[in-house]
Image (tube, rainbow, N blue to C red; front, side):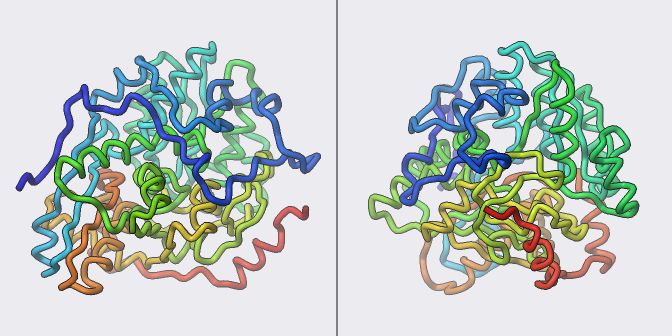
Length: 447
């Protein structure tokens, strides 16, 4: 038995897969917050390149990957599919556990899969600078890498609590030539207003998105880039699942359960969506999305129209949300601290394709330590949620043979301060109070 399956460069997918045409209940278009009518590409063209807007609204099942994008992806792709045999043994389970190792990218996560594509399309349309936000710093690192490859400037608004918790993420961004500031910052009207109102705020992805959009909207040479949530991001991330399907076939196996952690939804969907056509044709697959109990977007939020940012500058998206004013606690899985969920993932939950579960911080770190001590790779705090989900599935009925596939979305070598706090007993579990969620939800836009 092979421990890992590594594809050749010439086996890499040449097209991305778009799940939108295959969603049973369809997908609602974004709404213009002023008119409450579906928003066309014209307004969004002020901050996005037209090629990405076409992908965002595409009804084509497959989209060609440009050669220039493939050339850069080949630095680390195809990524390995690994059988977690030592973890299986430690769990004393008959389940087979596979993981798609996205931690092999230059910045240690799945994020460059879309960052490279977004930087390419912006550069092709003459854009010189990109503004973005980042939670844990993985997206900011990825876009910094990608913009450097295509000769673009990059400005990153990093959620303040992660800016303080994860200094080496800033170092990575600086190494690729990006300019990074803590959000909320003094550099935008949005940031200044929030700092005046909430001087001690840990920040949030919603606030950082507002700052990045304001930055892009006020400069002609600058576009905005988002690392999760949107359809074109999930399209680019589908390369994960497309590779995994080929690798599972080589392994002579097929997943009964597919698991990923959910923040905005991109890494989970990237692995899961290429398997959806098989599911719709009758293949028995369970799709499980794991999220933190402190930011329970899928399990505690509502499927409705909401803004993607705190300052209410984005279109209205039909998604699971905790409300655009929601500011989650500073848990160490910073990439999962977002109030909204990708409309595609939200639709898959609505259509009963995906089962969401919420997990506590301590059980996830415990799972991450076990994974490090068995498989040898230290996972990012976000990835620990997927590992915990896989352990739950493998040990629920340990004598039942099943095949589990999860997305190892990133390594944790830049997150050791979080592990230090875990080992020192300084982390605690946190269920976000339902009354505070209700308070945030009360401010949802009225349609």
